Image (tube, rainbow, N blue to C red):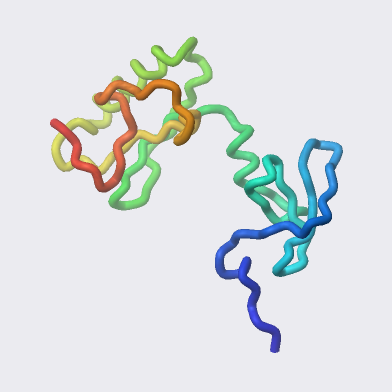
Length: 141
């Protein structure tokens, strides 16, 4: 009986030294643990090749603001923001959604998730009343 490989448990594939540049701009290799074909678009995150990659689809999809219930792990609503002209309009739309869904009320488990906001490398921090709430952080009323 064969032992399970490291990537089976961690879902993190690591490429072998030999890599190939593909026509679509991706890089392909074999996983050094499970020896299956893998592919990457940024050389940091590697995914199994040949199949539907949800992460890649999400990275290339349109921007949405999602209202998420953290307690029940449930998506309440998803709003596209492609029609908004700039970040100021997106921030105003977030304030409107927070008010419509009662997110500023004490005990609310709803939070906004912005698919376009990058966690790292932000140039300026958003205003306190517009920022995405963390699940365990106390919210000011």
